[in-house]
Image (cartoon, rainbow, N blue to C red):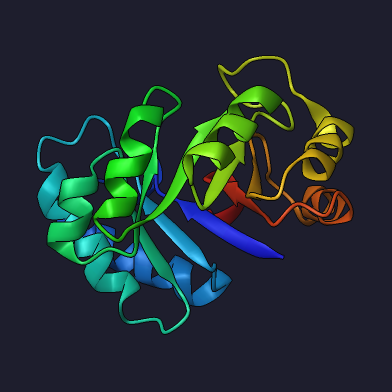
Amino acid sequence: MHSYLITSREFYTDTPAVFRSILHKQLQTHMPTYALYRDKANPDYDIQADYHVQVCSQFENVKSFIHQKPDLAIKLGAVGVHLTSNQFDKIKYSKELGLEVIISTHTHSEALYAQRLGADAVTYSPIFNSPAKAEPKGVKDLADLVTKTEIKIFALGGIINREQVEEIKRSEAYGFASIRYFQ
């Protein structure tokens, strides 16, 4: 099963040297398949995103993704872009740029729509209880979605331990995405 590390300012900081050091250690420790730079509040977002791509490139099997910004992802040489659930209109453009596209979804119909538009994968959330998020969907709902779609599905939301990862694995989802699991 694939794993998708998502950065957060609270853990990774916005201090460049500290960010690079923490990210490198987390990639080395967990060896995720995908890694997303996500920090909505960083005034130096582009600089930190560049560091993210540079650190990811040191690991042969880690795909670097940039949050929300397809043009920046191309400029920095990232593998892909992770779009928000309000950016379905950016899927085609991002694919035309040659990027892999993951988009956030919260319903079965959104996941199916992303599939029709040509996204490579979706995150589907929240699966478990997660701070400030909607009611958890649960692993059974995730497994139901997996049977309805052909798109790669990353379970997201409240994933903090190995037992939850094992539950997700049984759903036959493509993988899981998390912030806290990797901390």
